[in-house]
Every structure is written in structure tokens, then in C-alpha cells.
Length: 197
Length: 381
Image (cartoon, rainbow over all chains, first blue to last red; front, top):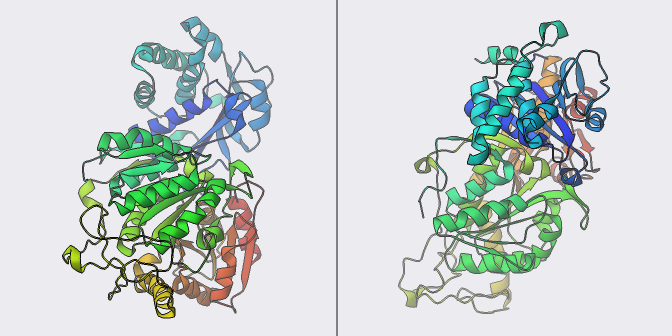
């Protein structure tokens, strides 16, 4: 079937902000960008501690099935979540993990970055999700970081805006030296965005 | 009543539940009484924030029985009213739902379906209340039941629900489910002027001539607001044109016939369906709600394999859209009816056309029917 969807899953422990990160990503693509998006999440006791998961599907066309079928991008914020939610991962998918909490990855073709450590250096561990968002946004293709920035700032209270902006761009900076081409990751969001007609 | 609630012509990322709130407010709903319950709670939460900003009233009631009582009362006083719940609460609402039907009060009741019976699976999707929505309250009664499949649907069909309730003086049940209710999608809300709104017809006669339940060609009597000077007696007992209890066979038989006649008169606009790739279809899926999303994908997958598949989405479940369903059954060599229950609406499809090759596919373990499951079944037809 023609590739017309870009499917992402963010997972971590409850409180690591993966659902917020997914909502922000969906807003950047669907509200500030011009694409169809569907954002869903695991729902239930998981949201109060335990493992938490959220998905985003992006397409230039109207989206039929709202959940992940063939995952193009997985962001895992800890080991348990990675182990639980790795299934459905496309062989050519992009796997990004928080090296602070993930020791082992199921594929060598992954990108380990210290999101939580960077967040701690910024002064608030809680913005690790935004650091990760910056990295994933930069890695997965050409989703304009400016759109992500708008979406982040619209979601956080005034007094935390500077911190969150800093976190987002710290994430973008983290991946400056990552060689995405070397990872054989296809399709990138480029393919999706290029499809719009 | 037409003050804009949320800025229109602007994009938002909304959950299905949030879109129901936007739709209700756009339709003119200004009263909400309810008791929060998973997975419908966002509707109550957002209503509690938004209604006061437009001069409306939000009440958190002690339970769902009282919630229904409150919205029936508010609607009788002339205010479009909404409540939302899920399975266990919907069961509690049945008594007063019958009262609303007997007294012909326009209200909209949202049921965001979850797994049952009883408290069941609070955080899992299901479609197992579709028969309850039709027959949950006792006695023959007229009722409209609509089902939504997306955020856009949740907005548009909610407006339709209010319009139909007002036009036909009947309760309307809007069925969503955990998947649609909690999926976020980007949506642009249309300008208020582009939203068709129907308000109940008020009496044109002076108060002394007014008969609140008098028949007319539409079978829908004009409705005076309580407190507006028109006498309006309201009872759950069988009643005559004046609204007073009357148990004569003529009155009782006539009342029920009128209830069914008023919806039959409006069948063309009430019985809403959507079609996808049906023009040259040889096999078809008929379903509703969240499963529609998987159905569309499965049809696309089948088409890629050269199979001429199509899809009929039932937006209106009750009164059952017989004509549209029969047309699909006649046209296709096989029809698949997938549902997130043990097989409920499939019985209606069977009743409409007894000769079609009909297959059902049921999932009732709290999980979604995926496109892959549907596709495999389609390929085996």
C-alpha cells in the first residue's frame, strides 16, 4: 500500500510527559502545520504511574484508522516502556531512546540521547519530554521546529515558557551530530510532506 | 443564544468528547446536568468551564437519574439541554428517558460506550449498548439514536442531534465510544452563520387555545415554554391532547401511532448514512462508530488487491436505515457486519434482507477491531 501515513509512538512511565509530548507534536503538525493528525493514548490506570503510551499518525490525507499499524518512529523514555511498546516497529523505523533510563535497545539501529540528564542540567527534570520532542522533531524529518515551538509555548503556563523553549532547542541541538542517513531510516516525514497534493 | 462560543474558522486539536461540547454549544445547548463517568467525563468537565461563559447553566447532579430529570425540566422550560454518560449511568437514565419520550421533550443524551455489563471495562471501548439505546426504557417508544466515528462527526452529528430533537420533539441518543471520545484530531470549526440550527416550533395560538399534545400533519405539536403563560400539563401517564391522564383505547393507541408516525414522516432526513466506494462494490462492510475507521482502511486495502469492496456507515442506528441497508444487501454478493459486541445490529441487517450472504465479525474483549482483521475477513468472503 502506498505510504501515506507517518506513524509515531511515544512511551515512558506515567509522569514523564509522553502524552503531553504527543499532543504537542500533533498540534504542531495538525494545527500549526497543514496536515491531518490523529492522536491517541493508552488510557486507564497506566496514566497514574506505571507505563504510559501515546500515538500520533500524520498524513497529507484524511486519516482512516487512527492508531499505529506500522510504526515509523518510536520514542522510549525508559526501559520498561521500550520493552512493552516495541512491537509494531517497522524494520526501517526510527528508534529514539532516553539513554538516562534505557540500557538495552532491541535494534542496533537506534539513537540514544540523554534527555533526562539534559533536562536536569536545565534545572527541571520534568522538561525531559520537551527535550525529547525537540530531538524527535529534528530527527524525523522536516516538521518545522518553529511549529513545534509554537505548539509547546501554547501548551505551557507563561512562567515556564522560557524553560520549555530552552528544553526544545536543547533537544534540537542534541541531534546535530547524529547521522540519520546512516540509520537507513525511511520514510522520513519528507516523504509524507512531499505527498501533499 | 447565538453568541460565538469558541473562535470559529480556526483550527483546534480536539478530542471527540471535546468536539461534542463544541457541537452542543454551537447548536444552542445552554444547560447541562450530569454525573461524570469514564470515558465521558471530559464532556462534563468542559461543559462546566464553557457553559457559564455563555450564560448557560452547569449542574453536577447526585446521580444519573437526577441528571435526566434535570435536563427534561430544563428543556420543558425552553432551554436546549444535554447530559453525557457511559454504560452504568446510561442504565440509570432509562426510567427518565422513557419519561422524556412520553412527554415528548427534546433532549440529547450522549453515551460514550465502554465494555459492559455493569461497571465492566471502564477504560475500554465497546459498542454493546446499541440495542439498549433503542429498547432500554420500557414500552413502545419513538427514539432517535445516532453514532459518531470521528472528531469531525462528534461535532457535526451533535448539532444534528439537537436539530432532530427539536424538530421532532423527541429524545436523541448520541453514541460515541472510548476510541472516538479520546482520539484527538485537528478540526476547523465552521462560522456560526453556516451552522443550520433548528429551534422547536412554539405555539402560534393564544394561550387559551393551546393544546400541548394536539396532533397535526407533522405529528409534532408546537411546544410552549413552561412559565410562558401557556398551560402545559406534563405526566408520564398516557395523556390526551391537553396533557391530562386519559387511558381510553383511542387516546392510548393514537398517541403511540403518532409517536411512530412523526419519525416515519421524517425518515429521509433522520436516517443518515455515509457511503465509501460503494458505486461498483461487489462486497461490502456495514458498520458504525469507531469501527468505521477500520472499515474504510480495510476497503482501501482490499481495493489494492483488486477486490471491489465498499462500505456503508450507519450514522443513524434507530430508526434503522432500512432502505440504505437493503440497497447494499441487494447489490453485493456478500456483506460483512463487524461490531465491538457479540452481534447486535447484524440482527437488524438480517431482518431487512433475509437472502443476502451475511457475515458477522465480533470483538468484545475491550479491544478495537483493526483494519487487518477486517481485511482478512473481507478477502475470505
